[in-house]
Length: 236
Image (cartoon, rainbow, N blue to C red; front, top):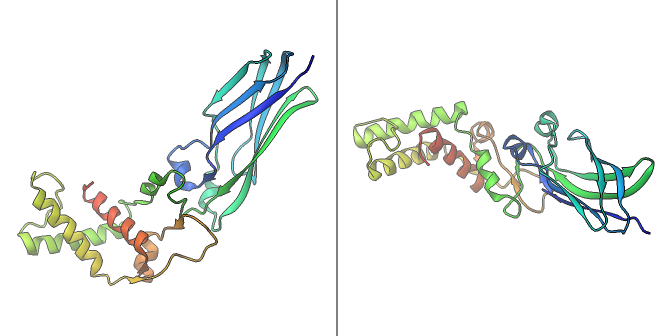
């Protein structure tokens, strides 16, 4: 008779403040598979993280029959908001899992994870749609830009209203977009490469505060500023 247990893990290899705030699970699935010909009883699964950016998770399994498996979907990992929000440099971490039966170690697994800074987008390789989380339509600086845009709009159309799609006129929508663009262009933001970092993919995204106070930004920074202003005006 032989006893064997395999652990397989499906997880996201990067985590940042934006992903945590949008409820993206760190661990999507854990599978414990009995590869032996003997039933395994009283299994205690423990998941922990280094550094401690999330709380430990544990689960008890009564038994796994020979050749069978147990699937644990979307493991409810509690990630520390304070840890992610205060991180100023990307760091490497580890997701570790152990399966015990009493004092006997049945299996273990250790996986690398990257913990990104609070203002860092992970790039197009992993959940590129998470870039949308860097749109900040409620930032006070956005309201200042849109107020100026309404002045341009009033000058061009005799109606300063940023009324999104209410007129049901796509030309009106284009005027609003153009007015916001003009209000941003008026700020004379100077192009500047991404903030200094050691990332090989993805990049940091400057906040509205940084762009407006330093008068510097790159293509992605300015795109997200423009997107923020459009969203604040009710434009998709």
